[in-house]
Image 1 (cartoon, rainbow over the protein chains, first blue to last red):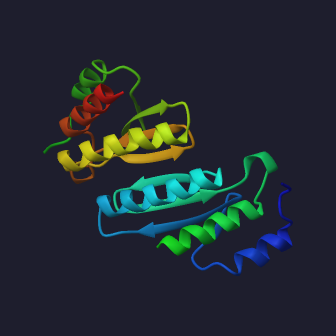
Image 2: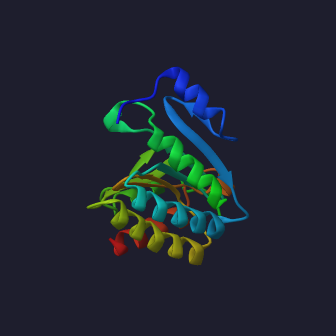
Image 3: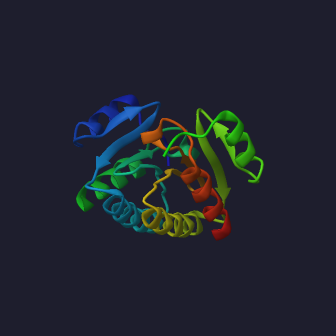
Length: 92
Length: 92
């Protein structure tokens, strides 16, 4: 799977809300009521990630969870990253 | 709960294996066979953290999990951090 061009990245990014590019990763931070709610969401995303065979970086800070997506094998962002981002958004 | 002195931190740190101080946090990174095993461990630690009322920073990178402990209210490391580190080690 090839990395998307900058133009394609911009195009796909414009279809998402609350996601941004940081250091080459597609990222979004979610805030929950507490740690338990944050962990519950992380587990739902983890199940999806396993099914997709594509695993986001996950940073948990009590009630905040940051996901970071990039396709290491492609050396950049691919449709897999944007597709997983959309799927994560649908869980929220 | 007061922050431990540097001498007390050094003393407690010497009783732990594989933990280190990084940017004022007590940290350890665990490596597992895969993402599923990493998530399983994270969930066991999360349960302990809830019971202790003390929540580590958790960074998940596929099969690697980094825990970071500090007591924000105390502005440093306390016995709560070292106690939770010991408990996490017993899970592994």
